Length: 220
Ligand SMILES: Nc1ncnc2c1ncn2[C@@H]1O[C@H](COP(=O)(O)OP(=O)(O)OP(=O)(O)O)[C@@H](O)[C@H]1O
Ligand SMILES: [Mg+2]
Image 1 (cartoon, rainbow, N blue to C red):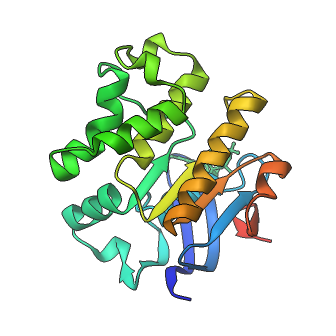
Image 2 (cartoon, rainbow, N blue to C red):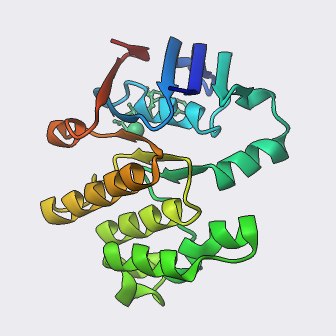
């Protein structure tokens, strides 16, 4: 198996006002194609861990290697390129673009990266996520669960090597939550991709082959 991520003694300290140590000396190896659930209480550092793995949050100390490359030593443009083409990210708070409609939100990463999108893949995603009837709506006109599904389609549009999902069923009812996890796992299994997600739902965590628990910024 090939190592896809290596975290070496990573600490993240937020220095806004009072210092908050969100991750404390975390070391972790992740293999290609692994499926990992991250668990832990609110404020434990789960989102911070996803953020440092995905190149979104600079580490205060330590190093994050992706396929042997130290992410935070890359030039801004090189890091953006990896994030755009290799990683998909479903944010806890969606971060959809409010003045773009659903279709444009989903297609944006594809158009930015390649100047075009695969039509069939786009249609597959929006049908699977049952948002095909909402293409011309803007995020403000959607329910929380619909926004979540749009965010998932956007994260998958570039067929990422690594899919990060921060509580991807947090706003969904049981049926839609199950459908989302089916899609994430189908994607990872059928295409041999790495899946790393945060969940508070123990049943959803059990779907992963490996579980990582975080407490007070450390893996336990
Ligand atoms: N930008 C920031 N500035 C200051 N502190 C922050 C910032 N982002 C996160 N924190 C703090 O870092 C700690 C870890 O936050 P994080 O968002 O990683 O937790 P989490 O495990 O994802 O929690 P939740 O389950 O509530 O989403 C928390 O104490 C949080 O308040
Ligand atoms: Mg979080």
